[in-house]
Length: 198
Image (cartoon, rainbow, N blue to C red; front, side, top):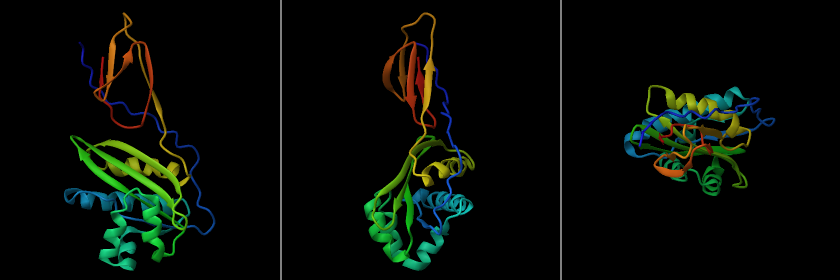
């Protein structure tokens, strides 16, 4: 079997920039993360806050969230991670219309990131994304900047199509160590890094 590990970056269809509803106030909460990634989670949340402000939202930054709620209440909010109902309940004291939070993990040489955009009054999920991002200088914040318009616009993850053709046909294909079929193959995948074996 020929092993072809490769990076597959499925294209993001960013489309037009999401504009904020008139006067919309958005709280961006530090990402829930293990202790060794706490700083990275805060940095990623700050990057998202910057992008949201560029799109017209009145943003309550991660630092301002802690100033307003205090350390313990902020930690409780962070633990909500990507649960929109929990986020709405815990963010009520902030007086915002929307809230963004999520979680961050490290798996080998990649970060696993999830973000949710929720209505702070009803707990309705307005958008969600999940990404695998290579651990590289500034790459995580760049991915967040690309994802912000989609998430703020109420969209989910963009999808890409992995197409593999071999001569002769019939080669077995695995994506991320999961068998997915034989060539010729067209498979929908999430944006990010994928391990492909043919």
